Every structure is written in C-alpha cells, then in structure tokens.
Image (tube, rainbow, N blue to C red; front, top):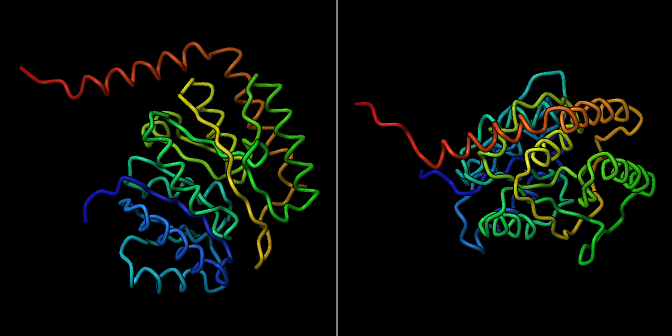
Length: 262
C-alpha cells in the first residue's frame, strides 16, 4: 500500500454508537475527491464497543487502522499517540462524534496544497454553519478565544477547536507536545503560530452530537488551558526569535536535502 497523501487522526472514547457513521462519511468524502488517505482511530481506553466497531470497519477497508491506549485517558494523550502512527504529508485531526463536516476535511487538504502550512477552521466567521452548539460551551469558547487573541495578537478566533490541518513537517518541528487533554488543541496551533508558519483560516460547519456525551469538562479544563497559554505566551515574548530561527534552519535543511559524503 503506497504512502497516503492525507492522514486523518480520530481520537475516540466511548463513541461506539457513532464511530461507524463517522468513518463511513469520511471515507465517502475522500473517495468522491479521489484522495489517497488513511484514517487512524485512537481508542482512548473505551469501555464500550468502540474498538470492536472500528476493527469491523477496518476489516473491510485497509485504509482504516485502530490504535488502542491504556489508562489514563486524555484527548491530548490520544492525539500524541496517534501522531506517531501517521504517514501522510497532510494531517487532519477530526472528532469521532460526527460534529465535523467531512467536506471540510477535503477543503483543509486542498488549502494545504494551495501553499499553506496549517489550516484552522472557524465556526465564527462568515460562511460558517453551527448547529446545536450548547450555550455554556459557546460562552466558554468565545471568552477563551478572545483571551488568546489578546495575548497573541492574532485574528484567528476559534483556536480551541480541535478540528485543524497541518503539514507533517510542521508538527514534527513544533513538537514534542505535552498537553494531555483538550488543551493540546491550543498547544499545537499556538506553537505553529509562534513559529510564523503560513496559516489559513476558513469557515467550517459544526453539528452538535446526536449520540453520547461530550468528553470536554469545562470545570477541569480552565487550569490546563491556562498552563499552556502562559507557557506559550512567555515563549512568544522571550524567545520567539530563537524559535523562528530554528524553524527557518530546519526548512533550509529540508530544501537542501541529504548531504553527500565525499
């Protein structure tokens, strides 16, 4: 099987009732657009039939693989595990609960191929569609993203959303990542922002889940988001020049290719 051009990473915890539909929708989208893709589902110690459902799907479609994690759980831990398993040039992180539109996965991929290093979707710009977003989560989202905009002088307004796309080399250079929960969403995106990668923001569609329950616990996430924000804020203020210099050196080395020995 040849190396895919697109890798889709789906962390999943107790999503047995919806994961098959999620996989079917994404596979249908990549087939419509004739994109060579792989889907890696990271089962984050589910205690339902999530793993069994993915294994059944994968038996009929080798583009789908499952990786299982032991406790402790954590969205960030699942993402970090999955990143080690991907082989595509473009990486999209998507949710398991059908909240993300598969056609937006395609738009992410196409935008990366237009010359961008990262694509951040926004549910709060013209052209976006949001259905059944819980009001408390919306309030937390808007306040947190406004704080991020002020701290990092950026126009990106939905950085807490996990659904994003990156070139593989961007993630390799920004990592390793350390966040264990949903705070990895801002650790990844702000790390790319600080390094001044070429980033596009596009409107996306988002749909409230119709099965199961959200794994995001707002009361527990505040201190974790704050920890990541403060770390990256001081990196931007104090050592951004070193970080950018390292990125530019890595890009130059990649362009020059491997050195020939005499």
